[in-house]
Length: 156
Image 1 (cartoon, rainbow, N blue to C red):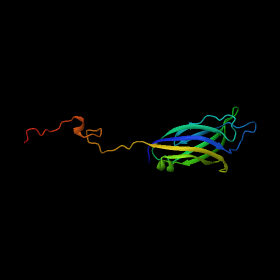
Image 2: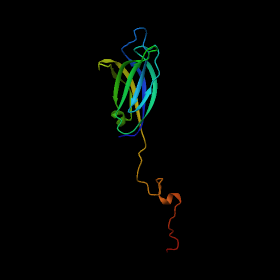
Image 3: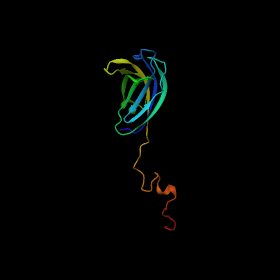
Image 4: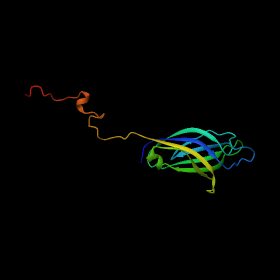
């Protein structure tokens, strides 16, 4: 499993179901990778077509395979409302390194289509650690860092 950093560009959403009857909804997104959770800013008054253009970084380790997006609607006087969610498989970005912003389907609690969200992904792998180093460490031979070396002087 690749280790490294996942950069998520949250661009925008379109066609979201507006569940705020009084005014335009104020959506935000909860982004989750395993146990790491980040929250976007609230797109106040942007209704069913919010724009964020925000970037989030996640540390990728052991068996991470998907990014979960949960779109919520900010309510001032009651609990925030669930709008929809999307789950994005990360295997393509692990192999490609970068995926340009693309639209992913958003589904509601009944798993019915309720809009789309545009996300760009970039994966930066950690440099691989090699065990090829000599016991002296630092990846250098003993001659290159001033260690003891037998002289050939006087052996002729």
